[in-house]
Image 1 (cartoon, protein in one colour):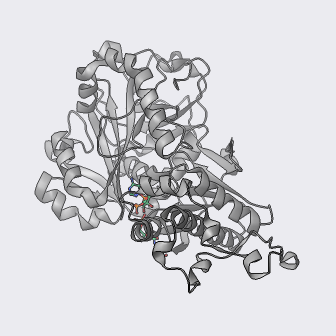
Image 2 (spheres, rainbow, N blue to C red):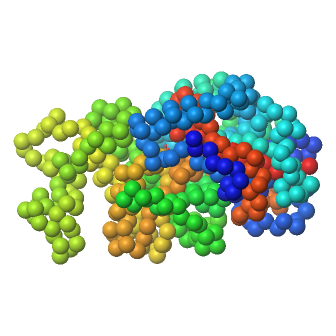
Image 3 (cartoon, helix red, strand yellow):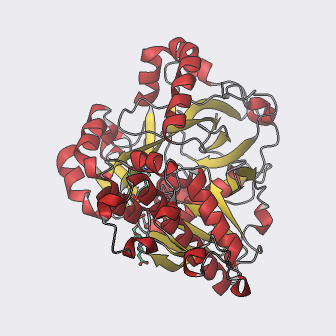
Length: 481
Ligand SMILES: Nc1ncnc2c1ncn2[C@@H]1O[C@H](COP(=O)(O)OP(=O)(O)O)[C@@H](O)[C@H]1O
Ligand SMILES: CC(C)(COP(=O)(O)O)[C@@H](O)C(=O)NCCC(=O)O
């Protein structure tokens, strides 16, 4: 069972602005990172407390992950039974602030749902810090992903959930506003007409890089244990010093790869990128192995041996190291280099070896380019996000080794637990932008001063059947009375 005890649970708090006049409806949910002045007199605000529990151990992949999920599901059975179908369904009914990141490979969704199955009194668990001006509403931040190529299925899903009404939701907001959904990624442009035609949704487009950075900054500042290093099978959480976070390099490995130098909350520049990314792995992998899905390809790579197909330094140097330039005999001299052999054709290579070699080639290449860009701008911290990583041990290990090797141990690759949702989170946070009235109350509490609010501390999977790795974070809203 993965649920952590509530007492002592680590909590991050974000103040979100909302005009909650006469109700608890959310409007203009915002997250900008300013100092919280506890003495400030806020008239209309909410505080979102992210009780951070990770949905699952992201190191688990493929079959092991699925087995673990099954186990978890069984263990969780009691809770889900207690909540019951009805209550789960109702919690989805209270969705607000749906935000989308429609990428080349995956559609990512983030939204908030309050626990509408319970009465308002049940929802309000107490007042934060004994502050009688605020009450606390519990709910969830949901994370879901779908394959972009199955967009028709996804549209059906949105339609069935009536997600088309889940824009900047506020009980008092005009109905037309509810159909305006924040969206980022190329698909926000590509599919805008389709979504308008099929669902009546109007996409309010946000810049992709902007959203990636906003999402990363939010996670790094607000969510405890978000960043970690991974090397030789060892995962170590990195404590982020919020005062000393910038500058850093954000490497987002989606279909393609973007590298962004982040200088402050609002200042960043996309300094590089490479077209050899997640799409390359999945695309070439499918051609080479006949695998139908990313998960199958990853799974297959576990059983492979890249040395069968990669040309090693030792293959060139007669089994010896090339120590003068620091290359051991087992280092890869040329990825897929052995395939130049006249004797062997494609069918002579095992799909698992090719999958392994491909994963290694792409991960290593990205790690190297990332480090060179960090070096270019004197950046010490490199954070990797994007759904290519999928918390996969071999991928992270390879990236880490590349960064370590090229930096001669000076730099470390860091990974993010909500790796694939940076853009969608950024879009989620952009709801407030249209609401200048809320501007004054944009604030972030860097460290929640008292974790005893965390009445519930649990994670549950979403009810989506389209994709894995979905989940939600229990969160609490502090609502101005
Ligand atoms: N279930 C999945 N289906 C397809 N690709 C996946 C899946 N899980 C992880 N990936 C990998 O993640 C990449 C997409 O990452 P993502 O950050 O969502 O980028 P994009 O915004 O371009 O869709 C894919 O190219 C693939 O390598
Ligand atoms: C064009 C993109 C920003 C789109 O983002 P994605 O859907 O891949 O997450 C990305 O694929 C990318 O940065 N590609 C690399 C292009 C280049 O710098 O060569």
